[in-house]
Image (cartoon, rainbow, N blue to C red; front, side, top):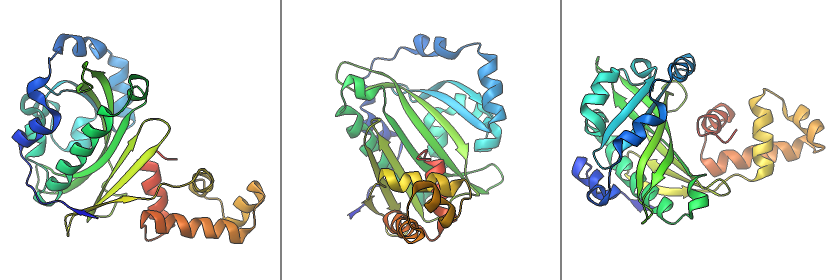
Length: 260
């Protein structure tokens, strides 16, 4: 288990993402989604916000969806202030975890082949201070839109939702995936430590999906031709692997991190 000790600011964000080495292509990124009113309507219906991040300038080249509901701040605030505006509204206790997570993200994608990078995703959560001083928790699903010849990300596509009612405070998580393999990290905000969690097996995820459909252990056992004892053993192992207090927290976690 490693300890996180450094503070986070915009300059360190630039260092992590090697912004000084990137060549921006803002017009290209804007053209990807410009004028797509149907996309905006779909995002609003789902209570989701979407943005393209230019990692050279640390600005959002476009933002769609229900931004006010997700972040508490207007679309214009984020467009004008960029990544710096968002970072300034993350509580100090979460900032160190954000730095560690972004370091892991950049290293992970640099090690991927071009084919794997197309399946890449990074999902992380963090808290944000809203205009009224209250705290909300955001889940952000990040995809790579474009890399340069050295493997550095030029543009990110970020999808964000409010999960304030689904996740307890004190811990942040990061899921890294290349489409075939997953890595899961947990940060303890009180101690500043980060550890890698054990990934669930395919059988455990199969059972978790049925648990998410409100099926009992007996019903799951019948469907999968297992004994109820075996199902309950898998349930216990999943709670232990991911350090969850109960089944509800487990299912919420697996849902917001797109495992089920």
